[in-house]
Image 1 (cartoon, rainbow, N blue to C red):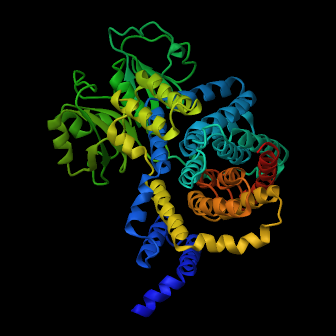
Image 2: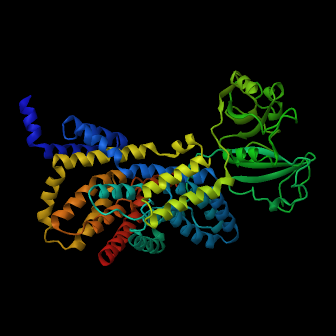
Image 3: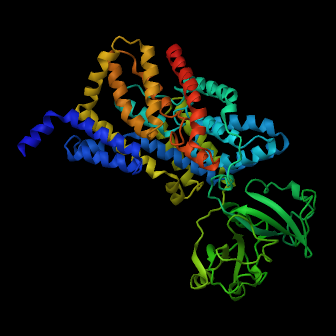
Length: 594
């Protein structure tokens, strides 16, 4: 036992490197998620005595992961209040009138949004928009999706809050004694990368495939469910006599399919149609839009056996029609529970297509999903219905457009306070979170649900691994190996070396893991060689994020890879030259301006 203890004491640095090598192999093999590997790796350092308890828990005092979590919540509030959806509707409206100009506007908007928001929800939102733009412009969608994703990734390199990777590197650098990074400190270098990347995308677009994606890809890769529903114009409504085109409710998330009046359904030239009392507007809408329309009270919504049954009171549940349901093949209006209970069906969803021609006349099929509004007693009766599956309160929430200005002000305020050095970005983001919670822009459970816990645990675990490598002497050992090879290298060569080394690792491993691992090594190397660490840290920060050559290089790459039905080689063909061009531009800017 004493021999093992002595061995661990003598070869601490080497054992740390051995654990790191095992983690690297596990990352590459991908049999477990990066988060699991990082957590097990941190545990291994603790088991071998290379990381004590106090040091392990000290990583939770690092502000970077908490700032990342706060930014997730702020992004969630912009979604919850409908800000992101309204931006998408505006883009689609512009695309219908000026499709090619809309492409340029989407590019600029994507870059700006990604500079301040987590770019994963931005890309998720833009995927279906790019499909629509492809239809409007005639460009193959595969020539639009990868460039859109590249712009989003490059936009995240413009500010400190653009990606979680930037915040991780900045947090570790601050712990290592470096001067804190301001929110726009990396902007000049990120802007050089953006300009170079855009030029490269324009010149190399011929390398992108032009074949259409499969049917699976055309869904846009989103999990949004569209429902068929009906909006009924009340007798005392102030919309009577107004033209349909004058309404602002129709857009990306609410599409007008027809107007039913007196038993006749009109499908064409609807924008100029004046509304009458009792008109049924047949619409296609996602769940959030239906809940928003329900809460607005502007229309009656859905169908019921008794017209006095309101859709605006009580709860809303989701229920799936069982294959054994006796009403399969019958009209929805004739389903038995609609006549036995005081409920209102406010939407029906069917995989791959919508039923029709209208909500009441839709023929029921097994696996159809219904949104049903009603009181507590009716909801309990639905749960006891043996012909309904998975009856539960709907988790879909209405948008809160009246609070959109608060969510925008909170985000702008957080960025502004940090930009003018009033407070740090971490404190500013937490204050903004408090504001949107107290004003109910987003409910607490939704706020916590907006946080990607997998990302935060990965960051904390890799912070622990980096600290363990430092305590064990592994960092010093690696720096000692590398220093003789680089001691005569000019500072500009170090910038290029750090950038492209972090880029190469990030194409294979998690960006945040690479950032957490290489930051202390980079800083220690800079101190050993007597050069300024700041340009090297910025090179690491951008190099770990700006990865385009593989579908696993960045999390949004995988989204586009699936949505566009790309091949792995498609990413390599366009991504490698973009990696080189962007890397040369960023490193040159660091050498000239840093």
